[in-house]
Length: 487
Image (cartoon, rainbow, N blue to C red; front, side, top):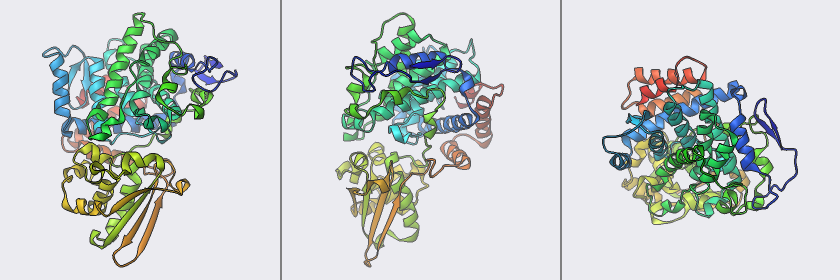
């Protein structure tokens, strides 16, 4: 392995095993720790600045909307406040909630809010949401270091590093990790969050490695939440951020973490995914600092599981042309990997009773978009008991697509049979927001305004966007000023 110390780029030149779980496996934990400790802001390119700007703005809008509107927010905030009544003990901000929180608590709440609406950014190759852990940890840590005030490029770098670690680990875990019952967003996300905190604090590689080692005992996120549409899912990235701060604090004080926690025979990759034969440890670390794979992260136009987005877009378009009463049957063809999450014909998917179940229901999302359009945002979840949606959902069937290359990644095929005997088929390979089907800057700002428009006036909206621009374009304003605006 070669590590270019001038810019922190990683290139592999040695030949240990590329498979995790072997004594001779490539030492990726050490490589990642060394990279985190040495990566330099000179690695930030103009195109990456633009991307991170959009990711941060998107994150803030979603977190604010959930803080103000999500039904799970009041009990979660009440529970956290009950642990330290009258003594928040910190200087960190929770978006649209207030300030005075300790960093690990602020990150817990912000991470939870940013994930609550299922509106947060998605990295398709790793099947996870990288921003909720990456940005939550970076914002809280930067605020907590107010005395030293990390410069804006150091903050941007911390976000980039967090995204990159999360996305690369998630890619190796693959979708197979879900079949084992783990949620990649949080299991991989804790390592990315540690990366963000470590970059901002300027920690040495040994400390970063110990924090990673400790995180191996905290990486968690059970997919059992699908059984009843529980709030576990929303808390997953919050828990990951909280525990990332704990792991870093322990490592800073000399607590020893497990070595080889990522690649070891009982380590993260081997334990959390059955896909070890498909993993490639060289791929995991090669190009770190130069090949920013997280830039494939897509913003979401709809507050629902990414696997339903092509369904929503197709149904919204078809609903403009054909009244639902003319529809005899709708068949939704999904990738095998997506079927279990959004397409199984279970009562809580066909007729969901909770927001989480509806977010993971191709039936509800298709019927709702057909009847009300694809631009309804979170208003969709005020219609869980809508009779029209209920009736149309009964005419929908989800099946495994036997022509999967035509519905790559999060794509789908929708086949509609009409009462008059007509049949229409629409295929969509890439969801809106992917580079092949882009979500333009104008749409990013429109989404942000839609998220916060009910409680922030246009003057505040403009100031928040300007503050994000200041951070990402080298202005004088920093994280402290931004968080004061969004408190």
